[in-house]
Image 1: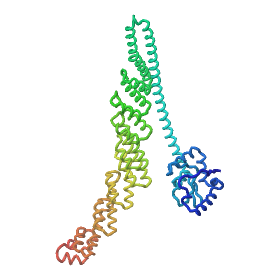
Image 2: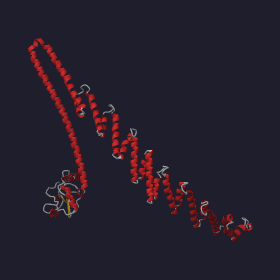
Image 3: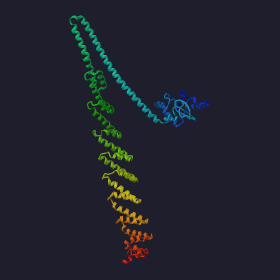
Image 4: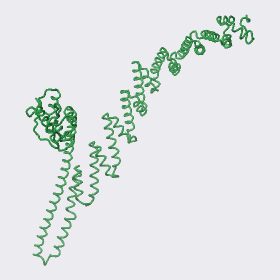
Length: 525
């Protein structure tokens, strides 16, 4: 059972400052009911149980307190309680009790909704905790490194100071000894001895001591302790070639970073070295190796962005093509045709062939599902002649279905595109015949005649031309267009129905034969 004590005083502006005395008495009565003897209600609901689980985890509880502080306007507010509602009241995590119509806590300024929602979202609390721990770890590591560096510097300085003090002490003792000796043999060797002592001190200070420090720094460099070597050479203040050795140490440190795949740090270090040795080439190498590592991890989008500036370096161009291929196939898998087609244009010939095959297979899959329209959008990207027969078959089947659905113009377009595939020329004639029949059945005999003629020798199209011509002439005669009817029927007068109509209808005698504008077929026998 989860219980949370309510004992901490509230901060800031309280409810007592916002309500009347009567309202406060009512509020206190309801609060007493809410507290139930100093504790929040027992866990009775799944939601409360979830909150209890969170609060039993000390780390998550601490994270909630930090998140609450970010929510509160009063950044000194602390989360001491579980936010709860009771009737027309709500208790903030800081301990203040508020009316439900108050959007923000009177004490800390935090809203009820976000702080309560955070309790319910354990995953969000865990994410925030992970981010906090990571940030704290990074700060701790940075502090450790800084402390180690400072300690090393202080140690080196202390050792240098100790050596210097010892040397100065030894020199002073030696001088004192020489002075005492000088007193003893002053008359015989005072001047030569003074010269000798001075020379020794000069040699000691100018040559021997700095050389010893230089040798120590060189040993550190040789041992790969680059930061310590840089510090030691810097302390020599320009002695011998110490400045050049500092640059050497910085270069070797950068090389070490590169070998340990700390690419960002290596790039920064080589950049700082400018034109030293092959630093510029090393920068390119570091950028390339970083890109390759990203590529090998399967993060092709990121790898592509890193490789593009290096397209002329080593095999970067090939890797770029592979990135496009992998991204294109991924986009194709997700039916993102536009993206897939864009990557499709950037691959090599072999990859292009593979991607075309994928487009083809994807289109056929859609076709088999009955989505012919989508299938055809994929086929548009396939130009490989080895794949065309598969697509032609799909197009052909689609055109046949279009014919069945009466979509003659669309079917004609596909059959024409397919050329000599299968019986496409015959199918084109068939479409003309079907269209002619459609026009014929709708009494549109002029178009029917044109389509029957276009059908050529398909079926009975030739005879149907004569029949449709007769129907057109009869239609014109019925409409009072005697002259048009005569001109239509006379060429097919060998067709019995047309002959009968020409010699039996009075309109022809009145408009044609009697006035002599056309011959009477009856007179031709």
